[in-house]
Image (cartoon, rainbow, N blue to C red; front, top):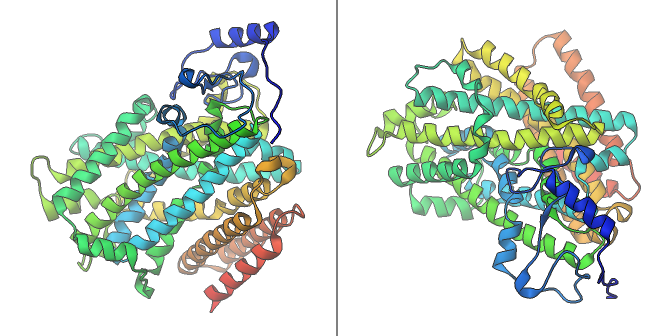
Length: 522
């Protein structure tokens, strides 16, 4: 490979501009200085980014591109650590926890293998999202605005915004339930909305609290290690557990998280024009993201097995949900050093609060990228968060009088997330497969087919969830007509996205998708 010319001399104008930008900033949550007003797009994204350098090896940002890959460095891995763990929170939000506990209570240990493979599929999608961000220097929402016509870009933004609102509502519901548990019911459910964004600064503490809480529950209840291993290694599914199986897969891939990760990786200063540095960044991000999702997988396993041990085969299995899970745990296991009700409450609060971070950043990236907002940070934050928080507070107030209906609301919210998945996956896979966008970092034919197969599988599974849900919930001719019309428009837009670029493997994708839906109909 021919090396790039070495920049031995510094440009005084560039140094002066960099100094001006640096001096006007304050630290961000992941130690990445935020933007100046002159280059203000989103709070987390920063053109003045964390410098990845290693004084011991003489590497600096002004070095030429690597002629040979540098050796692995734990210090450099630490410098890249952060975005993947923030991304992994979407795998641990209250919606996922409800899916875990219901899968454990109704299916026992039998769906652990599916949880493992669903997490692996989620990892693949997130690595492709990171690849887009590192290789292009732009995040997915920005690229979609440039790639698609204006009307299609607006529709994609609207779909992403709906997914974000649904995720925000689940986060607030989870936090509100946890606050009610920990306050012994003194605070009403709607009070959990106040201060829901104030704990974002203790992000690392919340992840630690979540891990410790659910690991403590696992140790206290002592699920069967033998059945756990069998559940992980032996694929098994039955007609009774098909809905929980679909829920396990559907909860793993969150539409807003696909947009988020492509932006988070840009917090490190990587020149997309330098092939060696891009490859190095992709290597370390792959390691970091894999480690982060391993942690999230273990926490999901803890939750699933605790409820499998306690409620599988009991008369409470079909009625358990996020609202009454703490009460059921307390009745089953009581309290040792600390009552299990409060352990559950702490973990649930940590999940709800930490997942608000992903909502905060994702909302700003999505709206800023699709609409190309050029606003002051405080005004942009007010607009983007109001779009999600206002409906969240309204929903919480409405459902405050009927807590039992919150589980039904969560089912609808999971359906909402499922509906939005194609509008994140299809643009991602279209862009990451295009040489005009990715250059030499476009994915190869084998990985491309694997990625589209995963996307088709996820969409078919979620299609089953939607079909099953609406067949059981849709009543009345008028409502049926509205749903049928919306479904036709929905499918038409998906077909348009798939066929938008000739480089998109639409034939391969359509073949898998058609076979999947044929299987569902039969």
